[in-house]
Length: 485
View 1 (cartoon, rainbow, N blue to C red):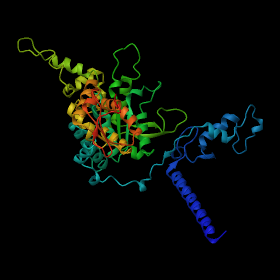
View 2 (cartoon, rainbow, N blue to C red; view 1 turned 45 degrees about the horizontal axis):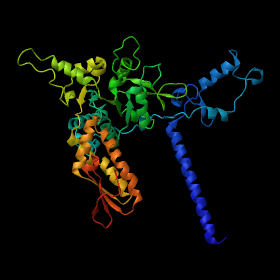
View 3 (tube, one colour; view 1 turned 90 degrees about the vertical axis):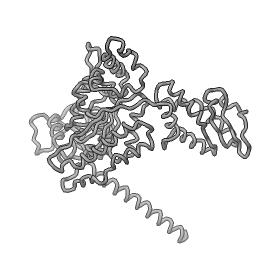
View 4 (tube, one colour; view 1 turned 180 degrees about the vertical axis):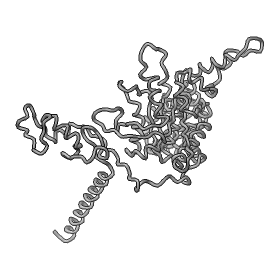
C-alpha cells in the first residue's frame, strides 16, 4: 500500500467520523427540543415529572409505575423492599424489545419555551401588506378579485393581531371567514396557493369526515391536530396559524329529525368553542383521541378559521326569498326572473344561510361572508394559459423533455372553454378535457424522433380534424400519421 492509498483511507475514515458526529449532534438536538411521553398515561415529561426509561422508546412516569406495582403486589406493599416476583402467580414477563415493537410509533411533543427564552414578538414592519399578498395570488388565481382582496386583508389583519396582542388594553377580535362559491370556482385552490406563499402554519381540513365525539369518524379537534402537525408539533407556532375547513356545507342540519344528527348540527355545536377561542385537548399525530397517542393543549384564540363550501341548494333558498318580494299586477316580477342569473350566490344573506341548515351560533362566529363568482368562458381561457402553473404550460414542459414544441391556437382554447362550460364543474373540467385529447399525442410523439412541433387546432378539439405536425427541418405537413383519429 503506497502513501496515496493510505491517505485516501485516512480521509475516508475522517469523513465517516464527521458524519457520525453530525448524526449524533442532530439526534441530541432533537432530544433536547422534544420531550418524552409516558407510554401509559401519555402525559409529557413537563406535566408528569421525570420519566423512568425502561428501554429506548419506552418511558413511564413514577405515578404509573407505582400504580402498576400496586396492581401486581396488592395493597399491602412495602416499597422499601424489592418485590418478590416469584410469589406472584400467573405472571409472565415480556421482553422489552418485543413490547417496543408492539407499541406503535408515538409522536413526541415539542417542549414549550421558557419565559426567558421566548421568541421575539412579530415585527409589524415584516408583515406583507394586502396588496402584495393579492399580487402574489394574482400570479396563480385568475379572477375572483373580491375574494382575493378579502383574504389578503384578513391574513394581514391576522398577522397584526398576533403582533399587537399584548400591546395595550384594546383587544382585537379575529374575523373568521365563510367562503361560498360554486364547485370549481377556486375556493380550495385559493387557500392552497395562500399556504405556499405565506410563512405561517396553515392546515386544510375536510368537514365531511367530522362526527360528534364518541362516534366513528374524526373528532372535531382533529382540525387543530392537523395544524399542530403543520407546525411541527410546536404549540406556540400552531396557535398563530390558519385553518381552512372545506366542504363546510356538508355539516348543515339534516331535515330528517328522527335520527341523531351526529355529523350535522352536532358538529356545528362542537366547533363553536374552536371558532370562538378556547383551550382544547388535541391528539398529537392522530385524528381522534385514543389510548395510544399523547394529548397536548392548544389555545385557538389566535387561530384564524376560513370555512368554504359550495352550498348547492342555497340558490333555491335565495330564489324563494327574492320571489316573495314580487307583487301581483301588471308590473309584478316574473317568478323565473332569477333562473338565468349566474352569480345568484352574490345576493346571499345570513338568513339564507340559516335556512340552508347552519345554526345561528355558528354563523355568528363567521362575521366575514363573501362569495366567489362562476367562471365565464373568458376566465377559463385565461386559466388555461396565464397562471404560473397553467395546464398548458405543464404539457408544454412534458413535451419539451422530448424536444417537441407544443402550441395551441386561440380558437382551440375557446373550444376547450366551451366544452368545460357544458360540463358545469368549473375549472376542474379543463383538466379532464385536455387529458382526453392529449392522450393520443402523448402516446404517438415518442415513436417518431423527427417530430419537432405540434399545434393543437379547433378541428382537433371538435374531432373534425387533426393537429398540425411539423417535422424537424421540413415545412408543415398534414397529419398523415392518424394522430387523434
